[in-house]
Image (cartoon, rainbow, N blue to C red; front, side, top):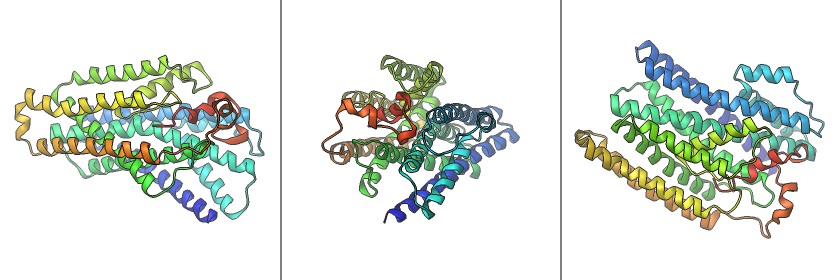
Length: 378
């Protein structure tokens, strides 16, 4: 049974790698298509999301590899610094992580691993899932918003555009669930996230709350370009919250500031727990604000641009936003009230620092441990 589970997880990681390549590749091809057809602004925006996300994620990946090399206490060979600089400069650090993890886990299927090797692989999986989560909200979600805007506002459609949007959507669903699964399996005071209904309900909660958010932001962009400063203000509020909470996620101050900026981006689209404790009140406030904003988008569009009511997309979008918000919040309530169980008795807070590591014995610094200690309820 354990071998079957490990094999299934290896296949899931392989599919995740394929989705990652498909998402990035389709976006790059789409930007080339835009440029060749004379849509320079669309091409630049599409490529900008790819590059900004890639540079940010590669930065975290390099820093975490360096941390692992410093703290390594296993028989796993440290990665040379020159090699790390090279692969991350070429923006293939995530690909290298995927290939390294897939190779190690494939060997593990054919032989027995020591406890330290299993802990090390768990750390690789945890870091990889977090990097994919960052990439999703820095690239895939904004990309989906941009392409939706282009279709609705400019009535521009192409097969490659649909492929790019489909890959972004799959990436959002996949990385969100994968992150949650890795998170729960890496914490000693939580049960591993089971497959089946709990996974499906968590996925539906995220999809049905993120999708109306994307649509509402698209409608706001169609209403006025002044929406962009408003979105920047929401980002600033989220980033400020991260500073106020004094997150302790990274080993350097500069990297911590970058992380807080990334948190601000994520909070534009979905709730992200940075407190590492019960977040019922912040989550409630967040979704009250989010739902109110989502519902106000079509109302303002109808009032300020009455001609939009005659379009073929207006009524379906309004109905979908209403339906999706309601269903998403229902799934959220069901998941956190019925399926979000901890191990009983829970680990005392005084003992968690020593045990809530994402990679086991090779990870001893507090910053690395708090990667997963913070995000119990994203």
